[in-house]
Length: 215
Image (cartoon, rainbow, N blue to C red; front, side):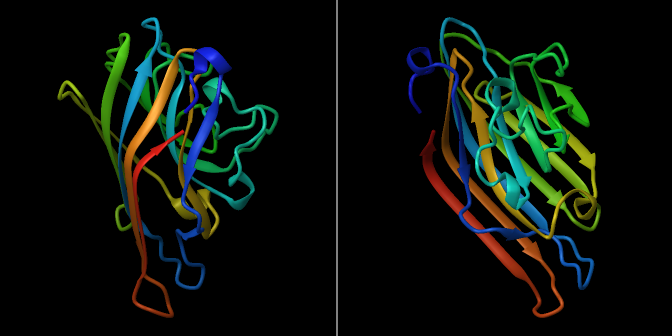
């Protein structure tokens, strides 16, 4: 990713090139999925800025939306009243719609998080490495998030949600982020696996493995 101190606020994303079936209208079945990624955050001048979001979204949101810089994390258009996505955000800067602290949030069609937890974000000049695991269990409709900081602290968050009510059958899957003026986000590795039982075959499997994808 270019240096934000030189080029200004930037957004970027890593996106799986194929759409992923997340539920099946003929059976009503919903996929279970799990994703893990490791990323590094580089802060300048001890100032945190914006963050990162893992997302599932509709076809209209495959490209980076206009008006989505800074706290919109490259996933929501400030001029669009309805942004269709399910996301997990790792937000270390408090915007007007955020709680007044660094947080992990579960977002349902909005950057006003449906559920948040305070995140003991430790920042300074230099890199911080974070390991993230997100799992959605279809039978229980439960989304679970586990984040491990490079100092060994573990943060967890969970939320019940119905993907059929929130997303179309086919979704784009990716990770999006914003640099603000003082931060660089480097994705070191990313994996995603989903399984959907359908009427025509026993399962539809998707597996993604990416190493050293930076933006």
